[in-house]
Amino acid sequence: MATTRILVINPGSTSTKIAIYQQEKVIFLKTIKHPLEVLKPFKRVTDQFEYRKDMILEELRDADVHLETIDAVIGRGGLVKPIKAGVYSVNEAMRQDLMECKRGEHASNLGGLIAYDIAKRLPNAEAFIVDPVVVDEL
Image (tube, rainbow, N blue to C red):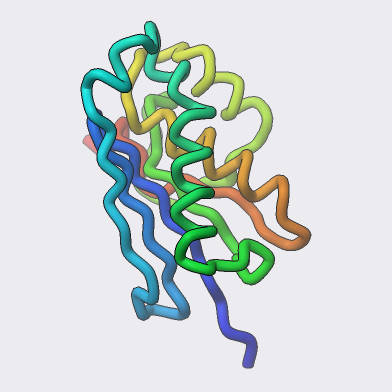
């Protein structure tokens, strides 16, 4: 049976948490702090996209994590249209909505964006969001 490795990305207002799961076990965990003076020049949250993605990739390189071993990349779901809880593939339409902040600006928008970008670099990985912050089941 093949071992599944998942990179999880959880962007917050002043930090980004990343983890790698192998099956159900956490094999890597890191909180990347983003000082306010570093974030201040970015006018919009999505302007932080390259900066945060580069920080994630640098941390993974420093930890000797080989991206080609990743099977899926999951980002904290952002401000998408109200949907039920679940796992959703990130496609180009969702990426565009998150980048344009069509439903508002929130750090979690970066989760799907970064997951999509990293997954595109990998031969067999897909990008997903899970239980976006807009989950509406009332």
